Image (cartoon, rainbow, N blue to C red; front, side, top):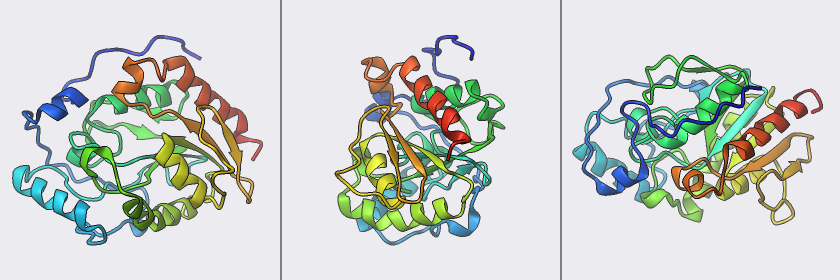
Length: 249
C-alpha cells in the first residue's frame, strides 16, 4: 500500500469550511449528477423536512445553478463496501450534486479510496471530473443540506427510509464504514442493530444481526484532519480493515 502523505492543498474549485462560513464564494455548477441507484432516490423537490426545504428554496434563489436538491447515491451499484456519510455540505455536495465533492473532505476521502483500489480517475472537486468508484458506494444519512451541518433527530429519522432502501438495493455490500457519530447511529439502525449496545468509536467494529459489519471512523472533515482528530494513518486503517473483512462476511 502506497504510504505517500495526503496533500494539504485543495484541488482547483474546492471550498473549505472557512470560505464556506465567509459566504463570499459564488462557484456554480450546471452538471446534473446520475444516481448509482436511481429507483431509490427521493424526488428532486422532496417535501418531507420543512426546515431543509426552506434552506433549499433560499439557496435556489441565491445560487440558481447549484444542485440544491437531495444528493444521490454515488458509486458502484454492485459494491461490496458501503460508506455512510452525514449530509451534503453547502459548498460541497449541495453545490456539485455528488457526495463528498467540492470541499476538503472529498479530497481526503477519494485519495484514500484511490489508494485502496476503490476509486479510479482523478478527483477534481466537481461531479464531471470522471472519478468513479469500484467496489464502493457512498450513501448519506441525510440527503439534503442541513443548516450548520446539523440535522435534527426528526430529519435523520425522516430520511432513514431512503438510506435503508438504498442499502437493501446493494445486497452485495456486506461491510459498511460510517463517517462520524450521526452516520454511525443511522447505519446501526439501518442495519438492524441496537443502540447504545453498538457504541461509536474510531475503528470500532459492530457485527449486525444479519452478519453485515459496520466499522466506525471519525469524519474526514477539514477540522478533524487539521486538529489531528483523524490522521491519514487512522483513516487508512479503517479501509485496510474493511478489505480484510471483505471475504469473511
